[in-house]
Image (tube, rainbow, N blue to C red; front, top):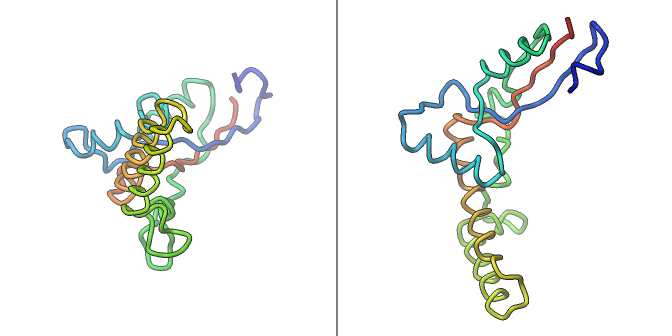
Length: 155
């Protein structure tokens, strides 16, 4: 791994997709959103920020800093990371609105029916649409971030 090729004092930084401290495993909506994100993006179980730090330390790193790079995303004058996935009634944003997704999905279904698109394309379209909705819901509820930053120094 990374630890093997870094010299003592070398830095390792990255971003992880995590559930935030606001995630409640007893909340059915939170669990549904989390599992939708995992399935739709081919991810293992999403970790917590604490787990990321623990793994870094266990791997022999001194964690210098770690934080959600999307903190404050709902402050005035901030554009949330999920903005483009949420869609809006504009030329560029229409395709991600509910109506835009329905149009795209219907087109994929038609293309699959006519055997222009491969079998299974409609299922993939449905999965991707559901995943986009889960990502937006997770971002709005602040229970998920795709930008948990960490940096550590090899001990």
